[in-house]
Length: 388
Image (cartoon, rainbow, N blue to C red; front, side):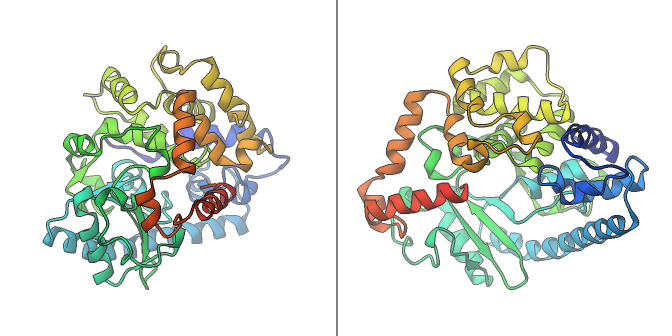
């Protein structure tokens, strides 16, 4: 799988053109750099200007150029620090799979200035999670105080089923790492029964995918998610951001435009059924198609259709048009409602809500955010308000 700049230009220009219909700006494309919908593509805009595809003022051109080159420089720092992390994990026998941006940079973008990353997502096997946590701490990383996980001592002696599914770390050099032992957080595990051991079994060797990938971190990794797990996970990641994360939309679009020759949609649909993500994939792919004209096989969305009730739940909260127009909606204000609406069936939604409101006693006894139900409910309300 490989990609060139022209492959990125097409879908981004398509999206910018559709957004421009709702923006009362004239003369140039400077508005994109501060736009709440497509501003994430500011570095791509810089390249589009250099290619003569859009017109920028000299001031914005210089600002975006500085941002583009700073993004490239930041990746060089990240890559250098990651080599130390990956080396320590390999020495300890801890398997790693890169997720999202850090995995796609060398596979799809081939230009570190074009793909912004706020953190690096790494997946380890559940049984190696605590070992991986201790390695990061030994390397000088600190647990971020997200969800009150200021330290790791509280869960070191817990049963593995009560460990957090992910932890955020950062070091003094500004490298942020999101360490995962699962692909989703435990809030949504009742709705999406992902067999993480099967994900590891399907994982494949991480190849350079051609000499033009050199220099973009591909030599760091030994394994990668299978192509089917990658697309399913990207759709799920978009869903768990309330269908409102532009970078993931572009990731999905580029992945589909560059599917390997061995790709079989039937095998992907089997995985969609296994993970119970019909509504997730249907709305994720239809959103990408609406934004970027993502090419899909004839009849694919019809086959993915989760049913009128599932479509109605999402439509009442958010739509492609409301995102493009940056129009206020209940789903934009509370993305968590969109996440719940994307669960395939009402009984699954109810079970998810019940387990969210009433977690197991053993879990509550040891988790800092849920030792009492009242404290748990306050934590959930806070997370919903901030859009988690």
